Length: 291
Image (tube, one colour):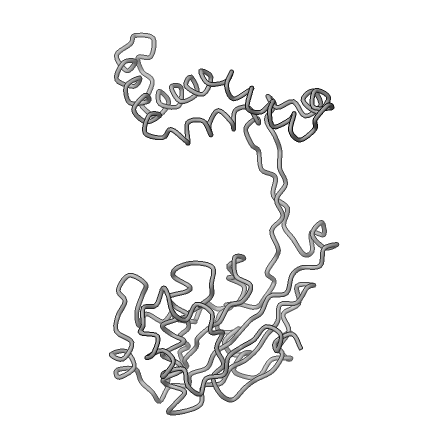
Protein backbone atom coordinates (compact mmCIF):
# COMPACT_ATOMS: atom_id res chain seq x y z
CA UNK A 1 0.00 0.00 0.00
CA UNK A 2 2.74 2.44 0.98
CA UNK A 3 4.51 2.28 -2.37
CA UNK A 4 2.06 4.82 -3.78
CA UNK A 5 2.99 7.43 -1.13
CA UNK A 6 5.95 9.74 -1.05
CA UNK A 7 8.87 8.76 1.18
CA UNK A 8 8.00 10.98 4.17
CA UNK A 9 4.38 9.74 4.28
CA UNK A 10 5.52 6.13 4.06
CA UNK A 11 7.90 6.76 6.94
CA UNK A 12 5.28 8.24 9.28
CA UNK A 13 2.77 5.45 8.58
CA UNK A 14 5.43 2.83 9.32
CA UNK A 15 6.47 4.64 12.51
CA UNK A 16 2.82 4.91 13.55
CA UNK A 17 2.37 1.14 13.17
CA UNK A 18 5.05 0.69 15.83
CA UNK A 19 3.57 3.46 18.03
CA UNK A 20 6.63 5.63 17.52
CA UNK A 21 4.89 8.92 16.77
CA UNK A 22 4.81 11.55 19.50
CA UNK A 23 2.00 14.00 20.09
CA UNK A 24 2.61 17.71 19.89
CA UNK A 25 2.25 19.13 23.39
CA UNK A 26 2.97 22.77 22.68
CA UNK A 27 -0.44 23.92 23.88
CA UNK A 28 -3.97 22.74 24.61
CA UNK A 29 -7.54 23.96 24.53
CA UNK A 30 -7.39 24.39 28.31
CA UNK A 31 -4.00 26.08 28.66
CA UNK A 32 -4.40 28.42 25.67
CA UNK A 33 -0.65 29.19 25.55
CA UNK A 34 0.34 32.25 23.52
CA UNK A 35 0.99 31.52 19.86
CA UNK A 36 3.93 33.86 19.47
CA UNK A 37 5.66 32.52 22.59
CA UNK A 38 5.54 29.02 21.08
CA UNK A 39 6.74 30.33 17.72
CA UNK A 40 9.75 32.03 19.29
CA UNK A 41 10.77 28.91 21.23
CA UNK A 42 10.12 26.16 18.70
CA UNK A 43 13.08 24.59 16.91
CA UNK A 44 12.64 26.06 13.45
CA UNK A 45 15.25 23.74 11.94
CA UNK A 46 12.85 20.79 12.23
CA UNK A 47 11.08 19.60 9.09
CA UNK A 48 7.46 20.76 9.20
CA UNK A 49 4.71 19.51 6.90
CA UNK A 50 0.96 19.07 6.84
CA UNK A 51 -1.38 16.34 5.58
CA UNK A 52 -4.91 17.12 4.51
CA UNK A 53 -7.49 14.36 4.13
CA UNK A 54 -10.90 14.92 2.53
CA UNK A 55 -13.65 12.36 3.03
CA UNK A 56 -16.13 11.60 0.26
CA UNK A 57 -19.56 10.22 1.12
CA UNK A 58 -19.76 6.45 1.04
CA UNK A 59 -21.70 5.12 -1.94
CA UNK A 60 -25.30 4.41 -0.98
CA UNK A 61 -25.25 0.74 -2.02
CA UNK A 62 -22.26 -0.04 0.25
CA UNK A 63 -23.85 0.68 3.64
CA UNK A 64 -25.04 -2.92 3.97
CA UNK A 65 -21.66 -4.33 2.91
CA UNK A 66 -19.55 -5.44 5.89
CA UNK A 67 -16.37 -4.73 3.93
CA UNK A 68 -17.20 -1.02 4.12
CA UNK A 69 -19.23 -0.62 7.32
CA UNK A 70 -19.64 -2.13 10.77
CA UNK A 71 -23.19 -2.97 11.80
CA UNK A 72 -24.18 -2.43 15.44
CA UNK A 73 -27.26 -3.94 17.06
CA UNK A 74 -28.69 -1.55 19.66
CA UNK A 75 -31.44 -2.54 22.10
CA UNK A 76 -33.86 0.25 22.99
CA UNK A 77 -36.68 0.56 25.49
CA UNK A 78 -40.27 0.50 24.28
CA UNK A 79 -41.79 3.52 22.59
CA UNK A 80 -44.09 4.12 25.58
CA UNK A 81 -41.21 3.80 28.04
CA UNK A 82 -39.24 6.33 25.98
CA UNK A 83 -42.14 8.77 26.15
CA UNK A 84 -42.38 8.29 29.93
CA UNK A 85 -38.68 9.07 30.27
CA UNK A 86 -39.08 12.10 28.07
CA UNK A 87 -41.84 13.32 30.39
CA UNK A 88 -39.34 13.42 33.24
CA UNK A 89 -36.51 14.83 31.10
CA UNK A 90 -38.67 17.93 30.67
CA UNK A 91 -39.13 18.10 34.45
CA UNK A 92 -35.61 17.24 35.59
CA UNK A 93 -35.64 19.29 38.81
CA UNK A 94 -38.95 17.86 39.93
CA UNK A 95 -37.76 14.39 38.96
CA UNK A 96 -34.55 14.59 41.01
CA UNK A 97 -36.43 15.98 44.01
CA UNK A 98 -38.96 13.13 43.91
CA UNK A 99 -36.22 10.52 43.59
CA UNK A 100 -34.31 11.93 46.59
CA UNK A 101 -37.49 12.10 48.66
CA UNK A 102 -38.38 8.51 47.84
CA UNK A 103 -34.86 7.29 48.64
CA UNK A 104 -35.06 8.87 52.09
CA UNK A 105 -38.54 7.43 52.60
CA UNK A 106 -37.73 3.86 51.54
CA UNK A 107 -34.15 3.27 52.58
CA UNK A 108 -35.25 2.47 56.16
CA UNK A 109 -38.25 0.41 55.03
CA UNK A 110 -37.75 -3.25 56.07
CA UNK A 111 -39.00 -4.33 52.63
CA UNK A 112 -35.92 -2.79 51.02
CA UNK A 113 -33.39 -3.66 53.70
CA UNK A 114 -30.12 -4.77 52.13
CA UNK A 115 -30.83 -3.09 48.77
CA UNK A 116 -27.97 -0.79 47.81
CA UNK A 117 -28.64 2.87 46.98
CA UNK A 118 -28.09 2.40 43.25
CA UNK A 119 -30.66 -0.40 42.95
CA UNK A 120 -33.10 1.52 45.13
CA UNK A 121 -32.83 4.60 42.93
CA UNK A 122 -33.36 2.45 39.82
CA UNK A 123 -36.54 1.01 41.35
CA UNK A 124 -37.83 4.48 42.23
CA UNK A 125 -37.12 5.77 38.72
CA UNK A 126 -38.97 2.80 37.23
CA UNK A 127 -41.94 3.42 39.57
CA UNK A 128 -42.06 7.09 38.59
CA UNK A 129 -42.06 6.12 34.92
CA UNK A 130 -44.95 3.74 35.55
CA UNK A 131 -46.91 6.56 37.20
CA UNK A 132 -46.87 8.63 34.00
CA UNK A 133 -47.58 5.70 31.65
CA UNK A 134 -51.22 6.74 31.07
CA UNK A 135 -50.12 10.16 29.81
CA UNK A 136 -47.21 8.62 27.83
CA UNK A 137 -49.59 6.16 26.13
CA UNK A 138 -51.89 8.99 25.07
CA UNK A 139 -48.96 10.95 23.59
CA UNK A 140 -47.78 7.94 21.60
CA UNK A 141 -51.33 7.32 20.37
CA UNK A 142 -51.50 10.91 19.14
CA UNK A 143 -48.27 10.39 17.19
CA UNK A 144 -49.61 7.20 15.60
CA UNK A 145 -52.85 8.93 14.68
CA UNK A 146 -50.90 11.78 13.10
CA UNK A 147 -48.54 9.48 11.16
CA UNK A 148 -50.94 6.75 10.08
CA UNK A 149 -54.31 8.53 10.24
CA UNK A 150 -57.17 6.03 9.78
CA UNK A 151 -54.83 3.06 9.84
CA UNK A 152 -53.16 3.94 13.16
CA UNK A 153 -54.73 1.03 15.06
CA UNK A 154 -53.26 -1.47 12.61
CA UNK A 155 -49.75 -0.08 13.11
CA UNK A 156 -50.31 0.18 16.86
CA UNK A 157 -50.92 -3.58 16.89
CA UNK A 158 -48.14 -4.63 14.50
CA UNK A 159 -45.43 -2.34 15.91
CA UNK A 160 -46.48 -2.82 19.55
CA UNK A 161 -45.28 0.38 21.29
CA UNK A 162 -44.99 -1.54 24.59
CA UNK A 163 -42.32 -3.87 23.18
CA UNK A 164 -38.57 -3.29 23.48
CA UNK A 165 -37.04 -2.34 20.15
CA UNK A 166 -33.94 -3.32 18.22
CA UNK A 167 -32.21 -0.75 16.04
CA UNK A 168 -29.31 -1.29 13.67
CA UNK A 169 -26.72 1.44 13.30
CA UNK A 170 -24.11 1.50 10.60
CA UNK A 171 -20.64 2.90 11.14
CA UNK A 172 -18.36 3.55 8.23
CA UNK A 173 -15.03 1.76 8.38
CA UNK A 174 -11.88 3.87 8.22
CA UNK A 175 -9.31 1.57 6.72
CA UNK A 176 -6.53 4.13 6.43
CA UNK A 177 -2.93 3.64 7.48
CA UNK A 178 -2.09 4.99 10.95
CA UNK A 179 -2.24 7.65 12.27
CA UNK A 180 -4.95 8.69 9.82
CA UNK A 181 -7.18 5.76 10.80
CA UNK A 182 -8.05 7.50 14.09
CA UNK A 183 -10.79 9.32 12.24
CA UNK A 184 -13.55 11.28 13.92
CA UNK A 185 -16.62 10.51 11.80
CA UNK A 186 -18.10 13.93 12.60
CA UNK A 187 -15.45 15.40 10.30
CA UNK A 188 -15.78 15.73 6.51
CA UNK A 189 -12.07 16.58 6.50
CA UNK A 190 -9.09 16.50 8.82
CA UNK A 191 -5.77 18.31 8.71
CA UNK A 192 -2.69 16.88 10.40
CA UNK A 193 0.37 18.86 11.45
CA UNK A 194 3.73 17.06 11.55
CA UNK A 195 7.32 17.86 12.48
CA UNK A 196 10.41 15.67 12.22
CA UNK A 197 13.22 16.44 14.64
CA UNK A 198 16.95 15.95 14.15
CA UNK A 199 16.75 12.86 16.36
CA UNK A 200 14.40 11.27 13.84
CA UNK A 201 11.31 11.51 16.04
CA UNK A 202 8.02 12.62 14.51
CA UNK A 203 5.53 14.85 16.31
CA UNK A 204 1.96 15.40 15.19
CA UNK A 205 -1.49 16.71 16.07
CA UNK A 206 -4.87 16.26 14.43
CA UNK A 207 -7.17 19.15 13.59
CA UNK A 208 -10.70 19.22 12.24
CA UNK A 209 -14.19 20.53 12.82
CA UNK A 210 -15.67 17.65 14.84
CA UNK A 211 -14.95 18.81 18.40
CA UNK A 212 -13.84 21.85 20.39
CA UNK A 213 -10.37 20.39 20.88
CA UNK A 214 -9.93 19.61 17.18
CA UNK A 215 -11.07 23.09 16.20
CA UNK A 216 -8.64 24.60 18.69
CA UNK A 217 -5.79 22.43 17.38
CA UNK A 218 -6.58 23.37 13.79
CA UNK A 219 -6.60 27.06 14.67
CA UNK A 220 -3.47 27.09 16.81
CA UNK A 221 -1.28 24.82 14.69
CA UNK A 222 -2.65 26.24 11.45
CA UNK A 223 -1.50 29.71 12.49
CA UNK A 224 1.78 28.37 13.89
CA UNK A 225 2.57 26.56 10.64
CA UNK A 226 1.61 29.70 8.70
CA UNK A 227 4.27 31.61 10.67
CA UNK A 228 6.80 28.84 10.03
CA UNK A 229 5.88 28.83 6.33
CA UNK A 230 7.16 32.41 6.09
CA UNK A 231 10.69 31.28 6.97
CA UNK A 232 10.78 28.00 5.08
CA UNK A 233 8.04 26.44 2.91
CA UNK A 234 5.86 23.95 4.78
CA UNK A 235 4.77 21.22 2.36
CA UNK A 236 1.17 20.02 2.22
CA UNK A 237 0.19 16.49 1.16
CA UNK A 238 -3.34 15.87 -0.08
CA UNK A 239 -5.29 12.64 0.30
CA UNK A 240 -8.88 11.65 -0.42
CA UNK A 241 -10.76 8.91 1.40
CA UNK A 242 -13.03 8.14 -1.49
CA UNK A 243 -16.58 6.84 -1.78
CA UNK A 244 -15.34 3.23 -1.72
CA UNK A 245 -13.08 3.57 1.35
CA UNK A 246 -9.87 3.89 -0.60
CA UNK A 247 -7.17 6.13 0.86
CA UNK A 248 -5.72 7.84 -2.20
CA UNK A 249 -2.71 10.13 -2.39
CA UNK A 250 -3.61 13.04 -4.63
CA UNK A 251 -0.73 15.50 -4.75
CA UNK A 252 1.99 17.36 -2.88
CA UNK A 253 2.23 21.13 -2.68
CA UNK A 254 5.54 22.74 -1.69
CA UNK A 255 3.89 25.46 0.40
CA UNK A 256 1.30 25.46 3.15
CA UNK A 257 -2.35 24.99 2.29
CA UNK A 258 -5.03 25.26 4.96
CA UNK A 259 -8.74 24.72 5.25
CA UNK A 260 -9.73 28.17 6.55
CA UNK A 261 -12.84 26.78 8.28
CA UNK A 262 -12.55 26.84 12.08
CA UNK A 263 -9.13 28.52 12.13
CA UNK A 264 -10.63 31.10 14.47
CA UNK A 265 -13.31 30.66 17.10
CA UNK A 266 -12.11 28.00 19.50
CA UNK A 267 -8.62 29.35 18.98
CA UNK A 268 -8.94 32.94 20.13
CA UNK A 269 -7.09 35.38 17.93
CA UNK A 270 -7.78 38.87 16.65
CA UNK A 271 -9.21 38.64 13.14
CA UNK A 272 -6.89 41.28 11.72
CA UNK A 273 -3.89 39.47 13.23
CA UNK A 274 -5.15 36.18 11.80
CA UNK A 275 -5.48 37.64 8.30
CA UNK A 276 -1.95 39.03 8.52
CA UNK A 277 -0.49 35.68 9.61
CA UNK A 278 -2.36 33.79 6.89
CA UNK A 279 -1.13 36.00 4.06
CA UNK A 280 0.58 33.79 1.52
CA UNK A 281 -1.16 30.63 2.74
CA UNK A 282 -3.28 28.90 0.10
CA UNK A 283 -6.91 28.20 0.98
CA UNK A 284 -8.18 24.67 0.42
CA UNK A 285 -11.48 24.56 -1.39
CA UNK A 286 -13.54 21.37 -1.63
CA UNK A 287 -14.28 21.84 -5.35
CA UNK A 288 -10.57 22.12 -6.10
CA UNK A 289 -9.81 19.02 -4.02
CA UNK A 290 -12.34 16.92 -5.94
CA UNK A 291 -11.42 18.24 -9.37
